[in-house]
Length: 253
Image 1 (cartoon, rainbow, N blue to C red):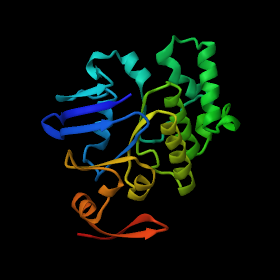
Image 2 (image 1 turned 180 degrees about the vertical axis):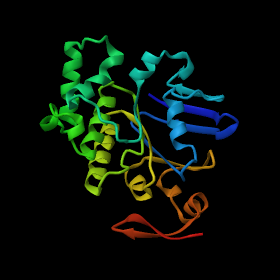
Image 3 (image 1 turned 120 degrees about the vertical axis):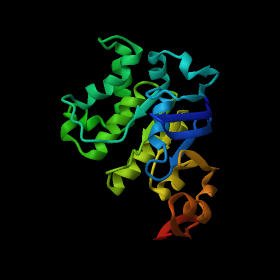
Image 4 (image 1 turned 30 degrees about the vertical axis):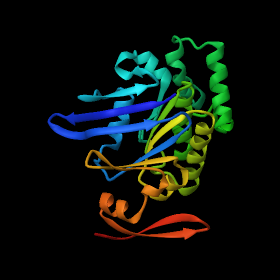
């Protein structure tokens, strides 16, 4: 599976948000989109998932244009976990994950659906809370459940919008370790994030957005002094700790 985005443009009414964006992603790669608030990160994910319709540009999944796919086929190919909120679902963890199987069948789950859900819950280490109400579990557990629901779709591409927001440090690492493992199993991942150090630690590719355009893209080397200061308007220090660069914000420019 490969994702190929060319010349993507999107505006809310007459206000341009995405201004000619190009992205490429191969099977099993983890791409992190970073940038200031209102730089277009969430809008980009919504365009990839066909929630929003771009005014110009193309989104290709392998050799198929997104516009040529049915909503059901898009749901089979793309799993989307939006930013975490305060929603409470009056259902169990198991039934929440089971919702991810809807693109593959009808309202009554098949034996394969139930097997896939059980395997996904086991893969993410959620067996001990599978029968609990989702409103009774922690924020980190809930984020894993929402990722499990997306994975139950058997997608080729997983979209995560700020998956570590509002999580404590332990749950941030657990969630990112979980999704990193999925890329090792062949799923391609596009994730938005504010934490530059976590992006640097987990990503194969990084794209830096500024005012609706890609300011810099590549590997972890794009997280350098010049780019960070230009995109975020913040002076930083970058230090090496056991051969791992750590980004330390110093002051606004």
